[in-house]
Image 1 (tube, helix red, strand yellow):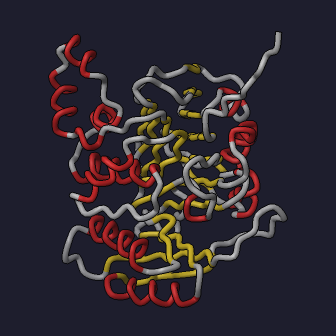
Image 2 (cartoon, helix red, strand yellow; image 1 turned 90 degrees about the vertical axis):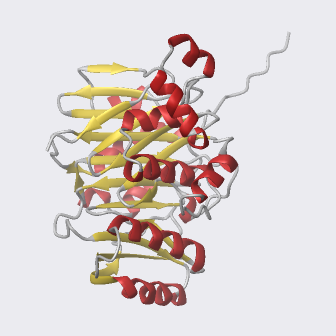
Length: 351
């Protein structure tokens, strides 16, 4: 008898760690946490997001940019100056890594909105949409206050070394190792994806991308990067920031129970969310870790076709694709568990 074995890769690697008391820790810890998950990625994308990393500019929007040409940078800066005062701009510090090849310019800007003619966050959102859609060769990597995203093509550990993450301290860190299935590996397509202070690392494949994209376009979002993770980032911004939903309700919209379950439990809130936010329902296998200035959220699809493990130790909350990622940095957690399908895990800043 012959036996054929086929490994189920089950996607990318994701990790997240947060100190709910706001105590900062080095970015080297998130790099260490994701290293045991190396086999879940293939070197075509790695990245990290950190919160609280710019204490010298806490009230400035920190735009991390990727430019493919000097012309793209010139046009972007001209556009920035129409609405923002640029306090400081500089190259993002990096170091040479043999396995990381970068031909783009990595730059960061610390800016404030010049005149408050409109909601500041809506203006920043519009800025990100315009740059990504209309300025060829320019891409906004992140645009939040006192946070930043660092990503590129390579394995996560090499990307962490490249960006010198051990020199930053934050109270939330998330990380991602990419195994692309439907899109090419390029610097702008690596995770995390960001908008304002949102960042998302994602393992999975969203089959409802087209529906979600068209739904978001009704609210002014421009999905031009052709990746499902971009859609999930914008959905969180729409549901939580603009519509004021709690993390729990946003999770019910994006990972809604089946109608049979709603009918069986007579859950009127779930029914209302499903009806009103049907366009935000995310279909397909996924597990995500969402970062923002006030917390960290873990969520999987309603069948849990992608893994997500959670752990706690004192004020620390850990999330990862596999338990080994948590135990690599916390050998004896107070609690470690596997959240149920569609169950949301939330860490909230106590400050």
